[in-house]
Image (tube, rainbow, N blue to C red; front, side, top):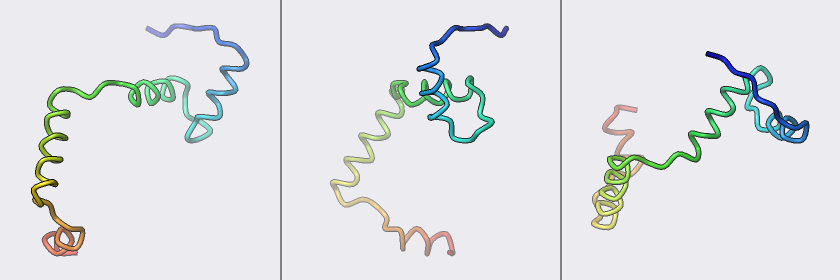
Length: 72
């Protein structure tokens, strides 16, 4: 169900400046802004920490190694 909200002209101007493309809806824009501020879930935090530990141990691939493995 759609709803209407009231915002000031100042906020509307600021939101317009944040749009990635001219026809982007305010809903799309607000979702993007919310996504940027959402906390990472526990699984993602675990994966990031695991990656940091692996990197410190020297367990990583260079870009060249990845390209070679991918056949690029």
